[in-house]
Length: 352
Image (cartoon, rainbow, N blue to C red; front, side, top):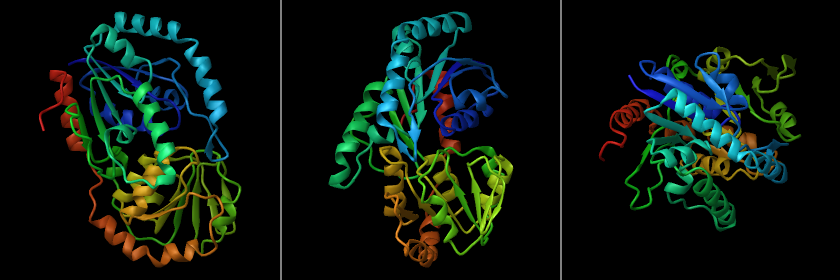
């Protein structure tokens, strides 16, 4: 048994869901989490967790609010000394033998100072560790985002990068492994079935044309993420429910959502084509949607004025999307857990 300190980025649900999936397979070890925001809400029911601030991303009207994000993070950075001292105290009392981080700012820095082995497990480092054939118009955003990830979130000793797309790794990165997605056990417990309804999900406040767009879909649309319940025409709003959502996801015709890597991976694992509306100014979400379309798994809509023909075009191509998805590989759990166990025991990644 090892004592493991696990720091998790608290914006949105994807990071905490990934961390929970890992932690549930490491119950023979003694785990203590560090998180904030939504991460706290998801982790606390099952594992001990310390509330500790970290950098955040502010989303408004389906886009990253740049100025608000900068202001929020400046306030957090002004607390850096107090946060680092608190982490030192946590480490002193918990005495971890190894640390894990999912896109968290402070813990890898403390680990570097103390010589505590630290492994990063996330999707975001696909931005910095791989080469991407993005259009010229997107390269400034790519450069800025890669610099942010490299400077703020890349202090770990080794990196497990999960991704449903597999771009080439940059040469010389011996401490990086690129692996298929990590899926929660509740996803794996369900078998996909063909169905006629559509699942629509937005984890953040969305653009104002989203609901008129959904109403134009000639199918029943089961809508999640809006804290509403009831029917409005072809839209059926549903309250948050992991079981209900996954049942609907496994049995739908296709999915309409943002650009979250976790949800895209789950939909693709079930063989469901995706129509993706990535959050504006979030280059990682754009990149996920870019590869979704490039690999023939669905379509990306990067504007908030979808053309009237988008739905019919998408539905006409459903057989093509399903065939492309069927040839993909979207489950990396055995490989990821094998690498994790090796790092916990040996403090290095296994050889390639």
